[in-house]
Amino acid sequence: MGGAFFASYLIGLRDGLEAALVVSILVTLLARSQRRDGLLPLWSGVALAIVCAAGLGAILTYVATSVLSGVRLELFEAITSLIAVAMVTWMIFWMRSSARTIKTELTGKLTEALGLGRFAVAALAFVAVIRESVEMVLLVFSAAQAASETVAPLLGMLAGVVSAALLGVLMYAAVARINLGRLFTGTGVLLVLVAAGIAKYAVHGFQVAGYLPGSTAIAYDWSATIEPASWYGTLLAATINVTPSATVLEIAAFTTYTIVVLILFLRPAAPRRAVPA
Image (cartoon, rainbow, N blue to C red; front, side, top):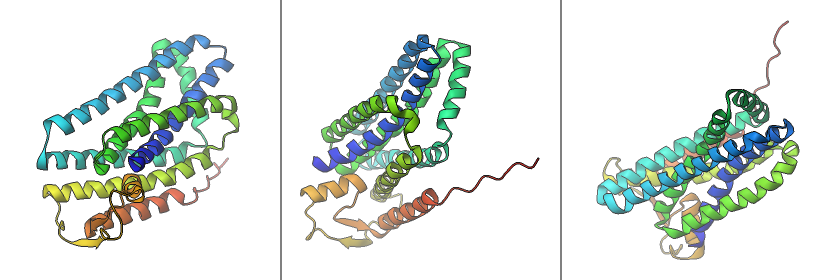
């Protein structure tokens, strides 16, 4: 349970921090512009996003536990894992490119939303939070399936979100002084490894379902060395899906994703060209 809890805690903390940062910026902008009348629709949009994400999690869990079984279940879990990897990859690079300009962009969008009315403010908050919430639900669902756990990932995600909310309160007072580049780089690298593990699990699911070859081509088998039920075995499996045994194709997917995404993510940003007069 410890490993699955910790993995989901990191996911909840990462995505919760991004959502809390956006909400903190929006609340700060409303307070500074003396538009506190926009706080109620803002929090309404946040609440609606959380409810929608919780509904998605309930639907995924119901389908996985009550509707599908056998090969269809493996295929369903593999597809949802791929969706989770695609979403988190897009989010990692979006946050990397937007870290320096996110506050300016949000200021412009909020100013426009205030001019359109309360519904527009609620919609802005909803879109900002639902993006992180859906990503978090998909990642935690995939991590839960990979770790064969049900309760621990949910508790870990909730604990991570609560921690992010508490940090969000602190960020509200210091949002202007936060180095967003360093914040998103550190959490981004960690999330790349988590996403690589989920990609590995997706390949495993497709192999079990018979949609990918190589299910018998074992790359390694450390079953005699790593006890799957031990705390370290559970931690490795739940965080980055390092299992006691894996196929060649699983290792290839994990390694390729990690190397390619980390190189692209950590490369220096291209200098902006000066606009000719």
